[in-house]
Image (cartoon, rainbow, N blue to C red; front, side, top):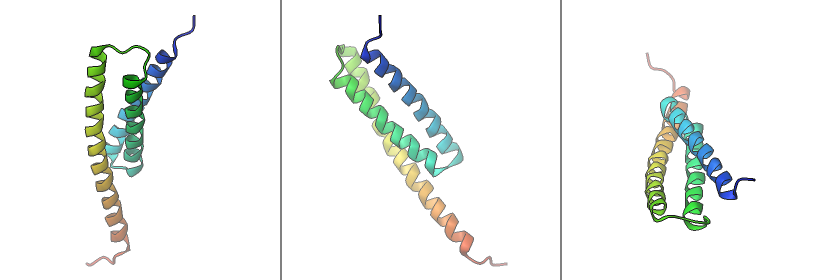
Length: 106
């Protein structure tokens, strides 16, 4: 008997969430802009997945709806902090690029 489509979607959301955490951790540790932007995009994908589970899933329990709302609140906070880190890393990259073109003063 094949698995219902909701189960396949749950697997996809779990894989996206794992990739989100890995990209976010690598972006923050190495201060790379690309990994942080990828983390921000994956956060949007996980947020859409959570919204699907809340609104259009076949059968939603009250407890599950509450937990999904808490997850979406944490994802919103994560998006705010990720946006701040992307802006900070972009500024740092801009300053670093400008500093390479300035002459060094002995």
